View 1: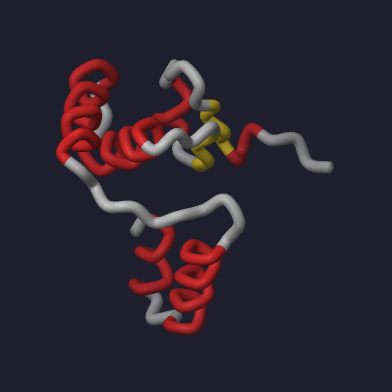
View 2: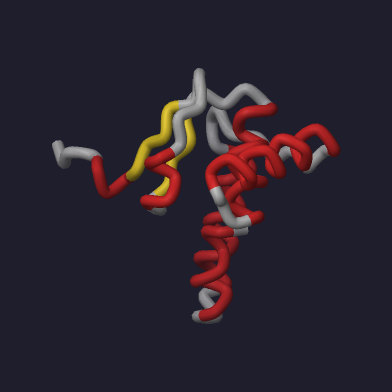
Length: 96
């Protein structure tokens, strides 16, 4: 959802389609449904870290389905300390 907002706002339908393809068929990526367990985990993350609801749902989904990394460019996530989940902030990566 998050990556599609700007291309949709800018009516870049080709870019929207490219993102859909990448996110639905990329290696190591899968689309999952939000379950009651994910919602409960999201509530806990929201209460503990003060995350916005969409952010809490994203992280809770990652944790629930066993992701080992969460890639973002939102500094809000850099303060999270969740066992087994590495938070990777793109702006913090060193260029090669």
